[in-house]
Length: 284
Image 1 (tube, helix red, strand yellow):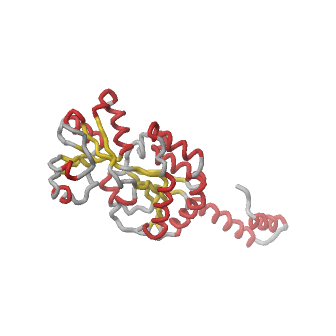
Image 2: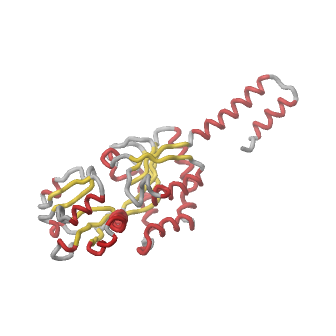
Image 3: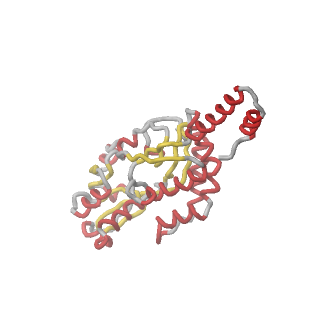
């Protein structure tokens, strides 16, 4: 670590036989630098959603790779702790990565969108007489599978003749589709396709999905806006955000996970819109 100008002056004083006050000044400067460096070690909370997040995935998945790219540029050391989705929704942690919209605990946060996802209806074609459309009238009378904790009020669906069935994993929802225990399920598109190819590769053509319009959401870094440390870490990320998100390294990560789909054409415009939305005061 290169000494600061103040530290060099303190050493010069010592070499000239200055008083013990110089030792104290040097010690304080050194300690303050160490404390500042330690203050930028943060532990994020998230919930496993392969291939976007997951402790068993290389680099913690797409989101983890982007956080690593940003954190290295911002000189922030970090870790990611994974908790169940129902607990994640209620999290009041100082540092979080994921979808801001699903958090139910109101808190002042800096929100930095770093990627996007959307949701689809998945179904098993051998059990469906005709292709589904993402419309309530098509789903009336259906058994709808959702991840536990992702639907706060099932009465909305019940009022339209849709029975909600909860499960603890995407894998179990897809198995329920194959066994005809549910008719359709709502999943993050990237996660649903990933799990079908991982578990049901030989049967993947029997699964179908249809995008739900208007479900594009950001994947974001969220930081406590009420603490000095949170504000300092936010400044670090803010300083590098635009440069990193426009880099070739960032685009390589997105293209790796989206594969044949390719990066949606409006990806960067949508990211900017979410960034403006949260910067304007939607970070609670």
